Structures are given as C-alpha cells and as structure tokens.
Image 1: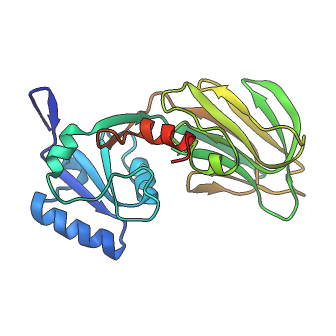
Image 2 (image 1 turned 90 degrees about the vertical axis):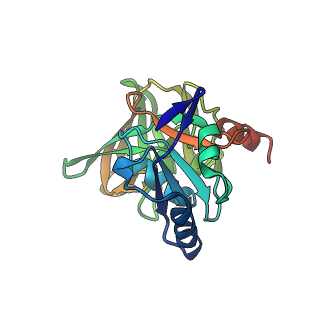
Image 3 (image 1 turned 60 degrees about the vertical axis):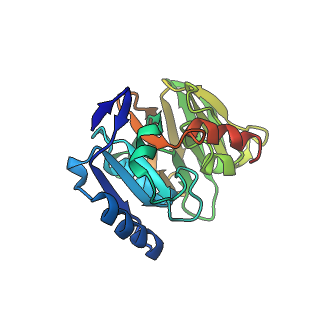
Length: 262
C-alpha cells in the first residue's frame, strides 16, 4: 500500500467469494484484471457476496489491520458497495473508512464451562424451548432489572443497531455514538420495558434464572453457546475494524438513511 498525493493507494488486493455463482464469476473477472494475492500479503481485502460474507471477513481478519471493501453479489448488501469491475483501485483509494469496535461475550454454561467470542453486530441471549426465558440484568455490577421474562435480550453495537436490534424494535444508533443498545425480544414482563441505551464502556451481566427449566442460548453473531447461566458483555475498544465505502455511501450515511426510511 503506497501513499500518492495524500490518497491511499491499494496495490495488492485479496478477493474473497461467498461461493455463489454470481460471486465466483465476479472473483474470476476481478482476479483476471487486478490479480489476486493471499490475504496475508494484501493491502486490502475485497469481499464479494452479501452482508454474511462481510461479517465473516471482519471476524476472520479481526486484529490483522486489514481494511475490507465489500461489493454486493448477495441479497441485502447493507454493508456492501455496488458491484463494478471498472476502476477498482481508484474506488479503493477514494473510499471512506468506517471504524467499528466489536463486543466481547463471556458465557458460562450450566456445567461451569466458560466460552468467549466477539460480535460485530450483537450478542443475543435467546430461549431454547417453548417457555420464555427469565433473566436478571446488571450494569457495571449493579442490578437494574431483577427479572425480565421474554423470548430473549440483545446488546447491539452502533454498526449492528440496524440489524437484529432494529427488527426487535431497538433504536438505531449513529456509528460514532459512544453507546450500546440493550433491547428485549418479545418482552412479557415487565410489559412496558423497551430496553435501554448504555454507555459503550458499560459491562452488561445477564444471569439466567431457572436455567434447568428454561434453557437459554447465548449467540455472538454466528457463535452459539447453549444452556448458559451467565453472560457478560462489553465493548472491545482495543480492536478497531475498518470498512471501506464509496464516497456518499459510508456506513454513517447508511445508518442515517435507515432512520428516515430509505
């Protein structure tokens, strides 16, 4: 990666495909034009697929200081740029970076085993059976809700606030807001509780009540731990992930558009 007249120049590109026919065809076309180096040698990773591939790529290269530029060869593509094979290096040089921080999840199951994972969108705590989950919520060691009866509960980052969190009627957060969204999923008691906005330095502890009778799973993006008793969630400010978007289509702009319904 070189610097020319103040603009970052990406020379070595690693292309990744989601494996669909459309994504594989794009991979072949772009590799033929620009070459395709191993990710370890690349200045930038270009992900060809949908939002699922983008999340997988962010997880795969977490902590490796690799900016990721997505081009939509999938369905939703909220995190992706429009696909075009033309002038890719110029697009990369002009792209605007967005930095997101993941959440850390520390889950303890009913056997006392502890498992950890990171989430870019959200950490969800979800019922495993026909019975609603019962949970106690503490923030920074202080109990704030003695009992929540619901299908589940999630903690979302600003980047993830337009995903599952929004579907659960949680708030949309600007990307640079120092906040996390704490959102119940189909809350039964207390009926009027709609969740909370928390400082992004807060530590959330969820204790599962009646864990044997009402089993609960904890999910960090795509990593699931079943039969949990306790889940601790915090934001990892030491890890910054860089997404690249075309000018005028930054992640900030996309999140703002979501709040106005377009």
